[in-house]
Amino acid sequence: SDVHLGTYGCQAKELHRYLKTIQPETLILNGDFIDIWQFKKNYFPKFHLKIIKKIVDFASKGTKVIYITGNHDEMLRKFTDFHLGNIEIVNKKILHLNGQKVWVFHGDVFDASVQHSKWIARLGSWGYDFLIRLNVLSNWVLQKMGKGKYSFSKKIKASVKKAVKFIGDFEETASDLAMDNGYDFVICGHIHQPQIRKIEKNGKNTVYLNSGDWVENLTALEYNNGQWTLFEYHKDFDEQSFDEKEDPEVDLQNV
Image (cartoon, rainbow, N blue to C red; front, top):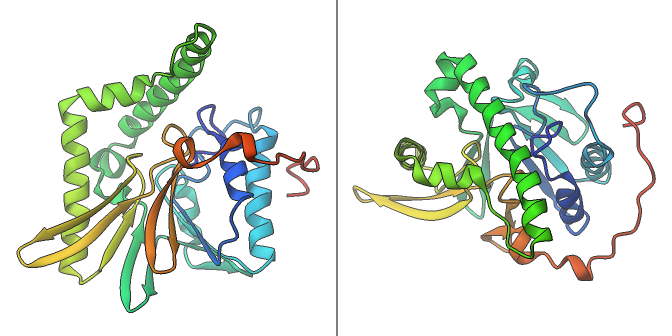
């Protein structure tokens, strides 16, 4: 979730490397895949195009691609239940895996600023994008000085009480609804906080999962052999052993 193609913060090169190492039967893009809010005609680098091409390649080779809409790509909600070959666009998805029910949706439905004051949400999005650009510059300087990377946006979210409370409330609300509806798992994106956590309340239980993002955390959820795991690029991906063959050039018209 939360790839935000078309923005300066999108880590498309790293995502492309990850996608080249997997062969999924089903691929779910859980919202904010393309950032239509901040889309600019003069900024869509080749690796952003390569991500789109890779998704289309997956679909053409048999992978079922489920595009769940988010708030940054809400324009696509007018095409809900659209199908084209192995690609479908939906607002939410119910999966049945090994006799268990999995509820997947982006999560912006819980965000009052998105639902009722979109200008506030967009202002926050622009501010977030500015922090990401500032991060790129500061981390370049830090690396030149031989020091580790630093994230302004993570620091702010961790220190602002309202942000911490919002994340907690978000997880609790999603889990409560999942338990009330008998879902064994609930999967969200939106808040850019990767997580796998079992929650129990009033004799009921569910597993809350969040796929994080490809702006800061570079994470994804994987389901294999009946188990959910959280892939973390900086921890689980060995760049040195990755054979990065140059892909043929792509352009928007061909994609």
